[in-house]
Image 1 (cartoon, rainbow, N blue to C red):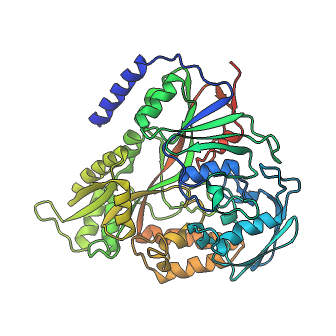
Image 2 (image 1 turned 45 degrees about the horizontal axis):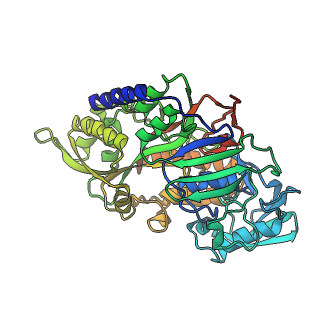
Image 3 (image 1 turned 90 degrees about the vertical axis):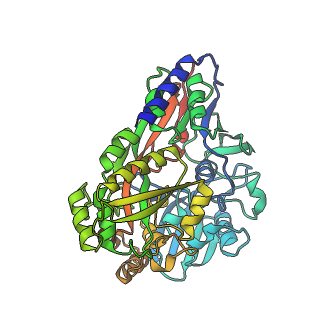
Length: 507
């Protein structure tokens, strides 16, 4: 904690010495991002920057509401006459940025290019239950399914796959052409991406003339650029300590709203110690999230009880809780056959990235677990090495975040179904429960949310009892921006949709 305070004091001093004389472009909003998008073809890019920028350039067939349900997008309405047939009716008068009309032929091509391997992408896997797509007229698209899949609508909505022009191949990577509220201007790797308003947009037109996404990997440099006035905004890219310093600046505003990003601990259930549910429950009781949320995140997080966020229509918070209870943890460890010998029951190795906040978090966890006799050995690696170990099962315990992937109940299949061990999915801890598998399969085949919701509620109760994960907290969305930027609205996903309504106030 003393180290964090020293960083905060040094940053505050640096900020106070900076000149505020930079004169911003009155027609361009400068948005700071941590890294370049890897691929602006919406059928291919899966990293956060690609998907969030793509969502401004391209339109999806459907959109997402504030409670993470699906809503109209390019399709103004749809029907599901039977579980194997989805009929979408497109808006009339939609045009791509090059002037071509957007029709059902473009929608069919977008998904056929994935399903038929014309474009190689990991996104094709989520459409594995689609048998074929028909376009009987210019404004009707019909998806025929091999078997029922209630997640199809979600996988056609915001950030999934934007519709591209008929015939588009790999050239779209360098020159993306969509139908969204902004059109692509230019991109330079590790430097910037520039987009401008689409004045012919079919929906509500953007107010901003131009947006420049400036790539600034270093968090302190991002803060300094905001303070100087050479940048206008950044979201979820400033440490809590730095936000505390920046909110004292009269030229800046900090917006906060509940988010959906989940921080969690994952267990390797093939490990001889951690395969015992009592040990996993003991770890949960030994951890005290309150000081970590209060001091490390400055209150910018909410304690979690599920992998789903509370905004989800399928969320169930009525599950077994794990409040801070060291005595209960010791009781469970004794019952599991791990008595304390000279104060130590066993060692656990936890793998993490080298992220500063993550390292501070696991240092606190190390101390809390030591109080119940568990010695936590921390192993920090650069992210690529760390993530490779996690995906290959080379860990006992690890800490990661779900960013976007946990916003739909489809996460239960991807992360907890026994058919989704890597490389087939993200069940990295090798959790297996036939009852859970059956519930997941049943919920996927029923398209009625009223039927699916109690199934997901039961799933969340089982997962809370068996703890393949410890769900720690949902991180708030924190947007820091210059006061010349107005009319901002944060959404739960923490993407860049606020740029659709944002304006630059006249000087």
